[in-house]
Image (cartoon, rainbow, N blue to C red; front, side):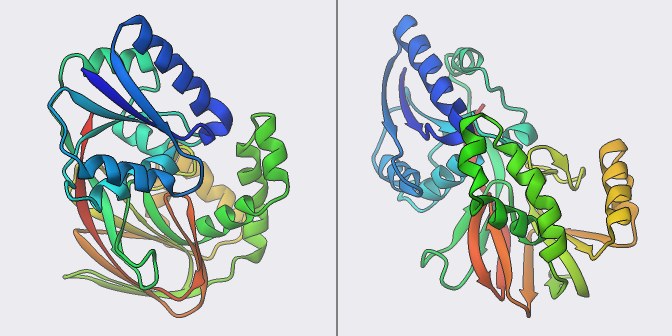
Length: 311
């Protein structure tokens, strides 16, 4: 067996660097042949994964990604855009939120993962999202977690552009910046109109606050936004939450964390389909697996796709 490592050492406020070092030590100790490449800038893992996938590899070679949800997104896009989009890879979650790993029940323990890879597991077909958006990297994109418009994207925008982020990351408290910016996003996020269509359904809301097309239940580091969503359902789920007051937010969060009954609230709406169209009229922030998309109106086509994961 030979392991090819793709690593984003900055993921997880340094957790990925520590995980990488533990993995290398295990590989050396167990006399497993390996090599590695580290990303040096945002988007480089797309290029590295695409270059890897473009080349033929023997059955005993394994691509192993170490990083967070953003790193996973880059590798997913690199492979899906390559000459061999069915190339399988393994993923060792070492980010801050690790929402995909939670949904896929993946271990963050490198020793457990290596023991599993030694058994030569067959690839598992896992759902992911595919989207077409004019001006986005001049080609279609893919996501493992979600494509969000509105509130969650505003929290992401304010957090990524906060002066406190670097300071908190240095003391391993990066999650606090997102908590702090929830209140800021609540104050600044306005409602917007949205139309969502599938082959059989059509929904329109004038007071949307959050519109998220998701591949699994989790958002923001483990918040179960839609408990019924599943990475092997062969569908995507579109969620719309209408504007709510602070007391209503507290109530929704209580039910969300208690038993998932928030989905019965009259201001919470969702639908499931293999293909979804999302249109907005006002300019809004968006995020795809945590990557910020500049403020704009959206005429978005999303559909379910798949990739091969070694787990």
